[in-house]
Picture (cartoon, one colour):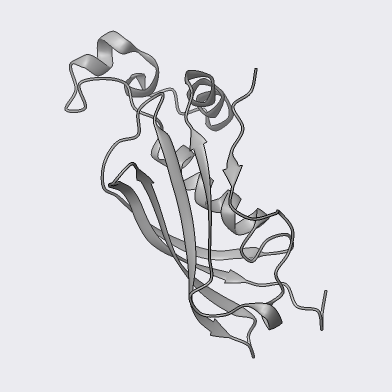
Length: 151
């Protein structure tokens, strides 16, 4: 059985011509042990803080945590599937990890349009992830948005 993400909007494309400052989209995803194991397999990051309960208990986290880039990948999902969506190209992303995500945590990944450069088709997005009221990751993304004129 697969845990599914919950979106607040249908997936697809919002062309740059239709974007507005302040637009936001998000998804909710409960991070499972299987997610962590699959990410370790794909990324080859098998740090025991993610996979070994005994090892992780003796770390500053006092238990296993999800890979930070797994959490960051949820931001990528919102950008690539919702805002701007299909056809978007990542140009850059800053990330600051604020708190750990643990197996069983439900992460809310959200992006918000903060600037639009129509001439260059570039969109700046405020990005963050939270577990409950705790911000676990924040940053900023720069993307090349799809356009009805060129795509």
